[in-house]
Picture 1 (spheres, helix red, strand yellow):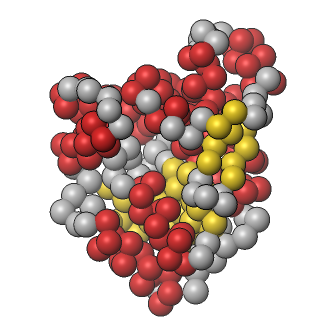
Picture 2: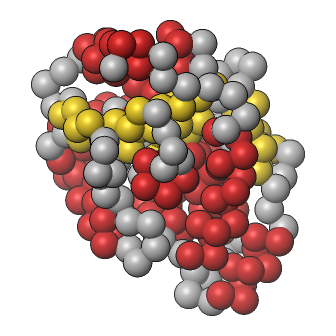
Amino acid sequence: MKKYIAIDGPAGAGKSTVARKLAQKLGYLYLDTGALYRAVTLYALQHGIDLGDLSQIRDMLSRITISLETNQGLQVFLNGEEVTKTIRSPQVDRSVSKVAEIKMVRDFLRETQRKIALSRPSVVEGRDIGTVILPEADLKIFLTANPETRAHRRWLELREKGDCVDYKSVLKNILERDTIDSSRAHAPLRKANDAIVIDTSFLTIEEVINKIYALAING
């Protein structure tokens, strides 16, 4: 039985849904590390922070407190206010990769992520879990899918929330995030050497979960 499971991959590969449902099936803690970066991004957008000004970023981080609750699914709190839904807005989508490439932000969140992840058996998802945050994970999964499939999934998700966005704009955002995430200087998106790759392009959520569950139980 694997105790710590790391799930990495690009935007729209299905990480959040798969990780959340897998954690429920295993009775493990679920940690979406991207939610922490989204919370920082939301704060930066709300307060007009210049992402090129390190002094502004340092001051911003000194004023941020992020906490998570998992009693009723994953709930994200930014300075005491629940922002679980707000951090999934298109505005945050467009800026989160830029915030996540800032070393000061990554350093600020790294220990918080590790502390939460190692507090109990967990399924942790993000973009640098198997390589940076939880390199000691018992099972490392790298989820991927073609860009068009990932953009379509994100487009449907936004429509269900009432956000009327153009599919081409979502695809453009996905491709831009891929470039930023994979080329950033600090903790770029990449597959850990011992990670198992699962292409979700033509698999259902249940099929992906069952594959990883079998690896967690028997692998």
